[in-house]
Image (cartoon, rainbow, N blue to C red):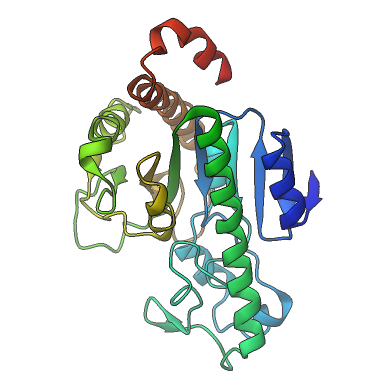
Amino acid sequence: MLKLTEKECVEKIEAGEHFHAEVEGGFQVKIEKYTFFVCTAIHDGHNLRDDLRDNCLLDESERLYEEDPYTGALIEDMPITLIGLDSRYEYDLNRGEETCVYETAWGKEVWKQPLTDKQKNESLEKHRRFYRVAVVLAKKLQAIHGSSLFYDMHSYNYIRREESDTPAFNIGTEQLDKKRWGDVINHWNESLNKIEIPDMAMRSALNEVFYGRGNQATVMKPFAENVLVLPTELKKTFMDELSGELHQAFFNELKERFCKQLLENSLCFVEQERLDFEENRAKYQAML
């Protein structure tokens, strides 16, 4: 895998190059084809800088509990992926700059000693870097296709929740233009509801547990006429949420079925956005 600076990464995107790279240690970008959709897993990462790790009050298992492990593996076969490498305890990509560096999180103090301005600014710059690259990518896809679709993938803990019947998939639409994108949003929900795995309740819902208030949809709002972000949460039934152990066989089944429905939804998106879809169906399917 390449190791690139932000500038080098941006130059490759703007030139339409295909590549797989780690960008300044903070996230991975993979572009196999310039398709009309992108898959992101911004909470997949677990890394902490050395100076932060030594100062952190939380052990690895406490941090892992609030991270989204395996969401990167879930989308890794898709043609364009952005996958976070750093822990959300360093900077949370699902929050704006004002609140993305925690002092306390989920009722727990995070740091032994308050972070210095230098430490905070280093984390803030990594946060900004991710979104600068994401916006460049969105603009590139807009130039090629006219519009694009971002699947903003997360996972959530459920064992300690008060609700007993939480959905396997939750799509948050609070920030989305439902008039513009309602058909694609509803199709995504219907597609996920088609997933069946023996002995497992697989139900999808809109705004039942989470509402899509995350930062990716916020950042893309200036482009909302041409960019749809679908904040999607997976219930952590595919792993032991307390230990972090993956249920490999179940995850493999889930991944196969989930990716199939994602591709179906991406074709729904392109059908809505392009009147010549039927004529060019083979071309779009070949891109996948």
